[in-house]
Image (cartoon, rainbow, N blue to C red; front, top):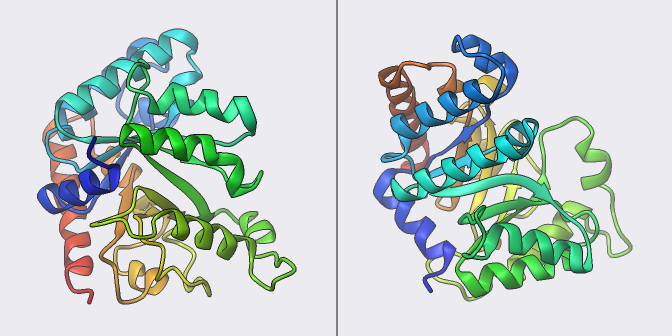
Length: 279
């Protein structure tokens, strides 16, 4: 099976280097004139699929906003995933799972095995029980051509107290995560299947991302405060593996399909102008 890294590399070349989130939180449903219930959730998700499914490289549903409606919300998520994949978009499910042993293996089976109704191309994961605790997730992803994006340097103010703490070898926790993911991607071409999540709002990181070998997901663009130009500050000159991620900046343009597409085209042009000029 073709690796996730290879599929992502091609999707970014064909459709442009952009990830768009699907975050149906109550305020956004209200902004769209929708009810904060199962019907509003389904209408919101269907509109995003109709507007962007055939043009975005990666779509990132936030699982929690579907889970809050229980089993019927998860059913909407399953339908949304299927429709996005049918439209040619890669699906990165934002779940940030992390555990040990049989539990993380069960998470891997839920999201990364083709037999699951929640099967997606990639998931987000938390490494703070140790990167090694995610081994079943990495193994399942490898077996089925999936990907895992591991939290490394996040933009929330609480993050640095953990991520910048130093171990006995002098490396920060975040650098240890970066280095371990780099090892998993060693030798992968054209792009590794194991990515890192690095917030676009954090400024100069003080960390070495140059050997990551996989995609660098950069959330926090647009309404969360960062601009495409900030990617140079965070990631330096080589932006070839950076995957910018927008949510509200695009979603606020709904519910009109043409409005969503115009917002998508605008932020994609912004990203191309910056990423295309990197070397």
